[in-house]
Length: 189
Figure 1 (spheres, helix red, strand yellow):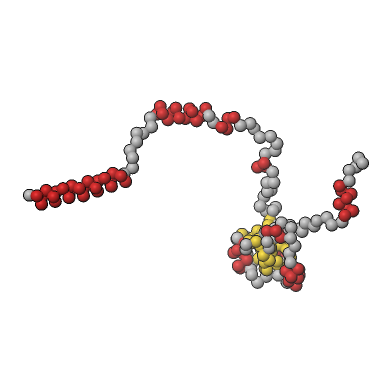
Figure 2 (cartoon, one colour):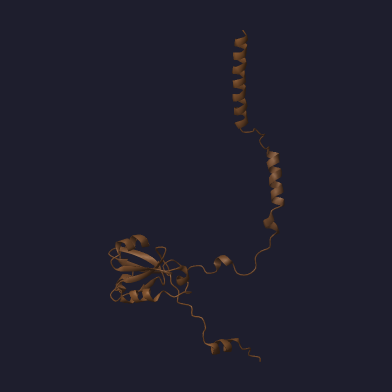
Protein backbone atom coordinates (compact mmCIF):
# COMPACT_ATOMS: atom_id res chain seq x y z
CA UNK A 1 0.00 0.00 0.00
CA UNK A 2 2.77 2.37 0.89
CA UNK A 3 4.54 1.69 -2.40
CA UNK A 4 1.33 2.27 -4.30
CA UNK A 5 0.79 5.64 -2.55
CA UNK A 6 4.35 6.66 -3.37
CA UNK A 7 3.83 5.74 -7.02
CA UNK A 8 0.60 7.75 -7.15
CA UNK A 9 2.34 10.72 -5.56
CA UNK A 10 5.16 10.49 -8.16
CA UNK A 11 2.69 10.38 -11.05
CA UNK A 12 0.76 13.30 -9.61
CA UNK A 13 3.98 15.27 -9.15
CA UNK A 14 5.06 14.56 -12.74
CA UNK A 15 1.65 15.60 -14.09
CA UNK A 16 1.72 18.72 -11.94
CA UNK A 17 5.16 19.73 -13.21
CA UNK A 18 4.12 19.12 -16.83
CA UNK A 19 0.99 21.22 -16.37
CA UNK A 20 2.89 24.06 -14.71
CA UNK A 21 5.36 24.17 -17.64
CA UNK A 22 2.52 24.10 -20.15
CA UNK A 23 0.70 26.91 -18.35
CA UNK A 24 3.88 28.98 -18.12
CA UNK A 25 4.38 28.77 -21.91
CA UNK A 26 0.74 29.57 -22.73
CA UNK A 27 -0.01 33.14 -23.80
CA UNK A 28 -1.70 35.37 -21.25
CA UNK A 29 -5.38 35.88 -21.89
CA UNK A 30 -6.67 39.47 -21.90
CA UNK A 31 -10.06 41.03 -22.36
CA UNK A 32 -10.83 42.41 -25.82
CA UNK A 33 -11.19 46.18 -26.18
CA UNK A 34 -14.75 47.39 -26.30
CA UNK A 35 -16.16 49.75 -28.92
CA UNK A 36 -16.24 52.56 -26.38
CA UNK A 37 -12.58 52.06 -25.48
CA UNK A 38 -11.57 52.06 -29.15
CA UNK A 39 -13.65 55.19 -29.85
CA UNK A 40 -12.09 56.99 -26.89
CA UNK A 41 -8.56 56.06 -28.04
CA UNK A 42 -9.30 57.28 -31.59
CA UNK A 43 -10.74 60.57 -30.30
CA UNK A 44 -7.64 61.18 -28.18
CA UNK A 45 -5.34 60.41 -31.13
CA UNK A 46 -7.23 62.82 -33.39
CA UNK A 47 -7.11 65.58 -30.78
CA UNK A 48 -3.34 65.28 -30.32
CA UNK A 49 -2.45 64.86 -34.02
CA UNK A 50 0.99 66.51 -34.47
CA UNK A 51 0.33 67.18 -38.15
CA UNK A 52 -2.46 69.60 -37.26
CA UNK A 53 -0.05 71.90 -35.43
CA UNK A 54 2.54 71.99 -38.24
CA UNK A 55 2.63 74.95 -40.61
CA UNK A 56 2.85 74.63 -44.36
CA UNK A 57 6.36 74.64 -45.84
CA UNK A 58 7.44 77.80 -47.60
CA UNK A 59 9.28 77.91 -50.92
CA UNK A 60 9.21 75.63 -53.92
CA UNK A 61 8.11 72.01 -53.61
CA UNK A 62 11.33 69.96 -53.22
CA UNK A 63 9.80 66.98 -54.99
CA UNK A 64 9.44 69.09 -58.14
CA UNK A 65 13.08 70.21 -58.24
CA UNK A 66 15.50 68.29 -60.50
CA UNK A 67 12.88 65.91 -61.81
CA UNK A 68 14.04 63.94 -64.83
CA UNK A 69 12.23 64.87 -68.00
CA UNK A 70 11.84 61.31 -69.24
CA UNK A 71 13.99 58.24 -69.68
CA UNK A 72 14.60 58.62 -73.41
CA UNK A 73 15.82 62.22 -73.24
CA UNK A 74 18.21 61.30 -70.41
CA UNK A 75 19.63 58.26 -72.24
CA UNK A 76 21.59 57.23 -75.30
CA UNK A 77 20.41 54.26 -77.34
CA UNK A 78 22.73 51.55 -78.61
CA UNK A 79 21.28 48.95 -80.97
CA UNK A 80 22.67 46.12 -83.06
CA UNK A 81 21.24 42.99 -84.68
CA UNK A 82 17.74 43.28 -83.30
CA UNK A 83 18.70 44.20 -79.72
CA UNK A 84 18.80 47.64 -78.14
CA UNK A 85 19.67 49.07 -74.74
CA UNK A 86 19.66 52.43 -72.98
CA UNK A 87 22.68 53.94 -71.27
CA UNK A 88 22.82 57.29 -69.45
CA UNK A 89 23.92 60.36 -71.40
CA UNK A 90 27.73 60.84 -71.18
CA UNK A 91 28.28 57.13 -70.43
CA UNK A 92 29.62 56.54 -73.94
CA UNK A 93 33.20 57.79 -73.86
CA UNK A 94 34.18 56.96 -77.45
CA UNK A 95 32.25 56.27 -80.65
CA UNK A 96 34.56 55.05 -83.44
CA UNK A 97 33.90 55.81 -87.09
CA UNK A 98 31.31 53.54 -88.62
CA UNK A 99 29.47 52.99 -85.35
CA UNK A 100 27.14 55.98 -85.60
CA UNK A 101 24.37 53.82 -87.12
CA UNK A 102 24.44 51.75 -83.93
CA UNK A 103 23.67 54.84 -81.84
CA UNK A 104 20.01 54.96 -82.85
CA UNK A 105 17.03 52.68 -82.46
CA UNK A 106 16.66 49.99 -85.13
CA UNK A 107 13.15 49.32 -86.31
CA UNK A 108 11.74 46.28 -84.54
CA UNK A 109 14.65 45.99 -82.10
CA UNK A 110 13.94 44.40 -78.72
CA UNK A 111 15.00 46.53 -75.73
CA UNK A 112 17.06 44.50 -73.25
CA UNK A 113 19.04 45.29 -70.12
CA UNK A 114 22.61 46.57 -70.31
CA UNK A 115 23.97 43.26 -69.01
CA UNK A 116 22.17 41.22 -71.68
CA UNK A 117 23.13 43.63 -74.48
CA UNK A 118 26.77 43.76 -73.42
CA UNK A 119 26.97 39.97 -73.14
CA UNK A 120 25.69 39.64 -76.72
CA UNK A 121 28.00 42.38 -78.09
CA UNK A 122 31.31 42.02 -76.22
CA UNK A 123 33.19 41.90 -79.50
CA UNK A 124 32.72 45.57 -80.33
CA UNK A 125 32.06 47.18 -76.90
CA UNK A 126 34.74 47.88 -74.30
CA UNK A 127 33.97 49.09 -70.79
CA UNK A 128 36.04 51.32 -68.55
CA UNK A 129 35.35 50.95 -64.84
CA UNK A 130 35.35 54.39 -63.22
CA UNK A 131 35.12 55.42 -59.60
CA UNK A 132 32.32 57.58 -58.27
CA UNK A 133 34.77 60.48 -57.87
CA UNK A 134 35.75 60.17 -61.55
CA UNK A 135 32.11 60.01 -62.64
CA UNK A 136 31.39 63.20 -60.70
CA UNK A 137 34.21 64.97 -62.57
CA UNK A 138 36.33 65.48 -59.46
CA UNK A 139 39.16 63.20 -60.59
CA UNK A 140 40.65 62.59 -63.99
CA UNK A 141 40.52 59.19 -65.71
CA UNK A 142 44.08 57.85 -65.73
CA UNK A 143 46.28 58.62 -68.72
CA UNK A 144 46.90 54.92 -69.28
CA UNK A 145 43.15 54.27 -69.68
CA UNK A 146 42.74 57.28 -71.99
CA UNK A 147 45.62 56.04 -74.17
CA UNK A 148 44.10 52.59 -74.48
CA UNK A 149 40.72 54.17 -75.33
CA UNK A 150 42.25 56.27 -78.09
CA UNK A 151 43.89 53.19 -79.63
CA UNK A 152 40.75 51.07 -79.39
CA UNK A 153 38.50 50.57 -82.40
CA UNK A 154 35.56 49.62 -80.17
CA UNK A 155 32.77 51.60 -78.59
CA UNK A 156 33.84 52.55 -75.04
CA UNK A 157 31.26 52.80 -72.24
CA UNK A 158 31.98 54.00 -68.68
CA UNK A 159 30.76 51.63 -65.98
CA UNK A 160 30.48 51.72 -62.20
CA UNK A 161 30.16 48.31 -60.54
CA UNK A 162 29.38 46.82 -63.95
CA UNK A 163 26.55 49.18 -64.90
CA UNK A 164 26.80 52.17 -67.25
CA UNK A 165 27.27 55.57 -65.58
CA UNK A 166 27.50 59.17 -66.79
CA UNK A 167 30.93 60.75 -66.55
CA UNK A 168 30.75 64.49 -66.00
CA UNK A 169 33.42 66.76 -67.49
CA UNK A 170 36.46 67.30 -65.30
CA UNK A 171 35.99 70.18 -62.87
CA UNK A 172 39.09 72.36 -63.21
CA UNK A 173 39.99 74.55 -60.21
CA UNK A 174 40.92 78.19 -60.90
CA UNK A 175 44.71 78.34 -61.00
CA UNK A 176 45.21 81.83 -62.43
CA UNK A 177 45.65 84.30 -59.54
CA UNK A 178 44.64 87.32 -61.65
CA UNK A 179 41.29 85.76 -62.47
CA UNK A 180 40.66 84.84 -58.83
CA UNK A 181 41.47 88.37 -57.57
CA UNK A 182 39.30 90.11 -60.18
CA UNK A 183 36.34 87.94 -59.22
CA UNK A 184 36.76 88.81 -55.53
CA UNK A 185 37.12 92.63 -55.98
CA UNK A 186 34.38 94.77 -54.56
CA UNK A 187 33.03 97.10 -57.31
CA UNK A 188 32.31 99.89 -54.79
CA UNK A 189 35.92 100.34 -53.68
